[in-house]
Image (cartoon, rainbow, N blue to C red; front, top):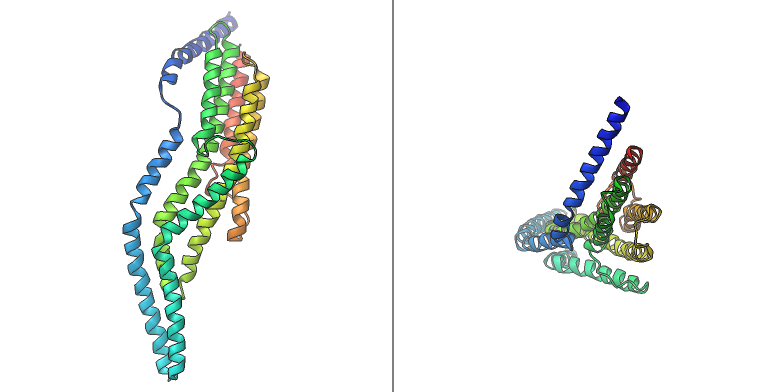
Length: 321
């Protein structure tokens, strides 16, 4: 009797949960989820551009302070060792060219950075267009597919088949989570690029002295590295979106668990590629091999946890059914 009572309780809980999900389907569709990542990106981009004037003024003061210290030290040492007039003029020319070059990099820092990022994004977009991909290269481009698949599973759910409906919903939710993680990867890269372009110009102030000018050079190396990661991410997302769209178009009208599982595996593969490949290419600029977690990496552990949770939920629903 206890066993039958427990099974009835489990079935009642499953039906109740499914009913709540189905009742909230209209509320889910009423929320405008299209372009949700782009909204966040535009907010960061707009606010980051307001920092440029303030940070540039601070970097300017730092630059000329270091340039003055460097000039006093350089010419003071030459005076102590009684250098001739020709050596003074030669050093003056070298100092003027060096200081002028890094000052030019400072006052054009945001423009140069944005130009580097936009150029490599255009390169990635042009290369992806060869594969007949005509979507938008934005974080929302792939997460919208996850919302579409999840909405389809909700629409195909039925209260008369709670176990099958719950498994389909769990698989659709897993696809949505993975597409959201891919979108977050790209969102992290783009936000990091805007913050670096406008907020990172402070480090260009260290170009005023020969002892610290490597920090100013590293700024542009970092910008180029992030731009390469964004270009690589665009290529990966273009391939991934086209692949998922093909599977979605070829899916049957009714939800098939095998088809949903294939899309889930494909999405997981794209997510893992988006974690590793962009950092691999940017390592060519920095000279460091990719290791651990970095910008543009939401974490393989998160993907493993997500897929494990999806599998456990699906198994539990199947067992209770």
